[in-house]
Length: 267
Ligand SMILES: [Zn+2]
Ligand SMILES: [Zn+2]
Image (tube, rainbow, N blue to C red; front, side, top):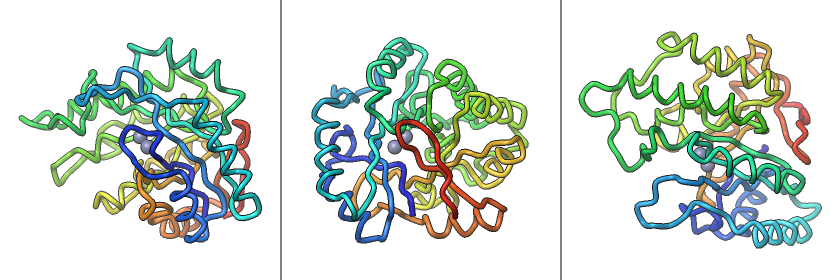
């Protein structure tokens, strides 16, 4: 198993020690992980906290962990960078400054219209279609404006906060979703299969299987798998199930990253 989306205490929303996440991964038989703490400039901060990472401290800790656990597990240096138009300059500066120090960059869209969907009920008063449309348009803008990601994270993130039964369908937004997937492929980047959907009771990964299938049809080959765990018990969650489904869909490999270059590992 390869868990390429993990948060630790360097993220504003986790207090897990880096070592506790590594130990959990080893216990669960995971071969390789990427630690991907949050940087999300200008993300709404109700507590006044900033979604930034002390990079010197972070990279130093990861280097120590790589040393300590050599031979037991491969640890990659990642980051999950939240992209918004309002702070695109800072995201690009971050990329230029740290691209040589990182193995893996997930670019994600969390805020929508400057709002945190976790804090605000966006879906009130029949705005379902509009919410998804705004979100996917924001994702389309991200993949255009920030082409440097290794993979783009949880492409339909908003679905986690949709209280309705129906959610959305690929067909409803097919041209927009195809545009996003085509641009990702043109960027030479990939998508992630984010298994947190199982954790929150959606019974599927983010994005859903038919979008993963569509990505493949359009020529996409780079795909990582990540639990998006913020605590040790969620490391590697539902990953085996997802590998089985990927195999049945015809995938023979998934991707890992080293120094921001994708490598295929057999499934
Ligand atoms: Zn995320
Ligand atoms: Zn995450």
